[in-house]
Image (cartoon, rainbow, N blue to C red; front, side, top):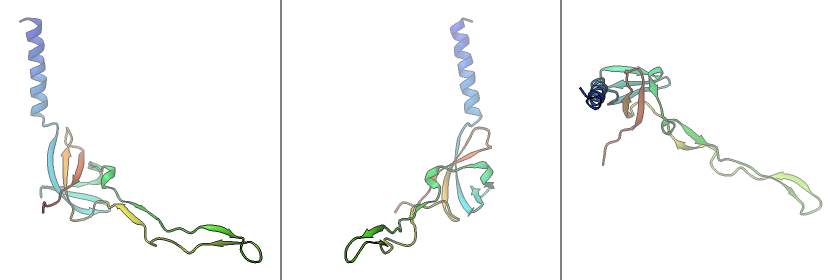
Length: 126
């Protein structure tokens, strides 16, 4: 057997081994709780946070916008330090809501099956 044929046979065997081991699988699940995070996968088994990789895009993020300004009032009979009335909403603005119970998610099972990456929420097309 020539060296080239041997190398091609080894490459083919390696590719077949990777394909047979299912390096990545797409699965679907339902978030059962957000704190602690648990996901029921295909109604067969439940994953806890230890087995889940959550991207930043699915984490809760909010920004408090309420603020006041301090200023010196030089009008009238002298100067005085003052503050403005609070502006904007009292509650923070939610930029991204995190995962919550009832969300449907798409997951990638990593090679070996010990870690699952949550791709995104799954929604019904309207």
